[in-house]
Image 1: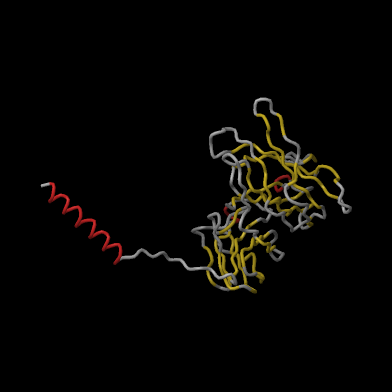
Image 2: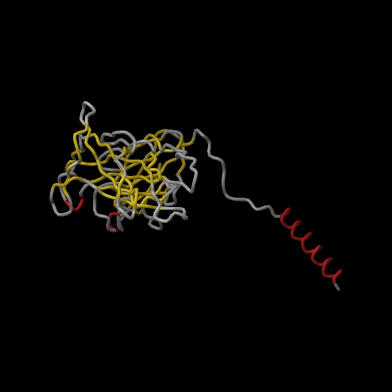
Length: 286
């Protein structure tokens, strides 16, 4: 009986191996050439986030890129999964946005898409999009323990008021908690280099002190923005209008997750509507 069982198992294994060889599993994928344009589309216009402003149809050169099955929402991007990109031939392409349930054409521009990976930012329906190098692969670091950093890229998309881009050069800075028992904080440190309107920093390492030592890790990171003068001097903290309509120094904080890469896009009005006030919108890159 034991021999019969062994023979049966042998025949079953032989059959399975033969089946795998005959029915090779193939994935619907192909290599992307280095000459191909790869891009993500970010919707960063300072408007209401309601569904009436969803982009429910996107066309590229007349071909359907997305539908209302996966709409492009305000302050978000497509493709929705981190690390994914659309592809097309490098060069001039026509990009068309259709908004809301009526699919009103609200954006119809020609954009030059270079070879490689790009971040395409729509920040004003009356302006051509920003096309920035995505700066991938993302930075990596070797640590003695389980890691102590997150990667942040800051974008200056702030308006002074509606239709008036800022003329300020901004330096994004971070501070992390050294001791959660005492609340002691680190010194302020720069996130990349100062950037003018329409510019972004490089991907920059931001330190995270984990709240739980034996874990993949996360911790609070505080942020502020300094204004940099034409001569390179530090002019102090950025002053802007808050949700109550008062002019205050900008400050914010985010939970930093070790090993992640995240976009911090600073959009909105510095000295205008509190509803669309300037603030950071965070999206995960990786």
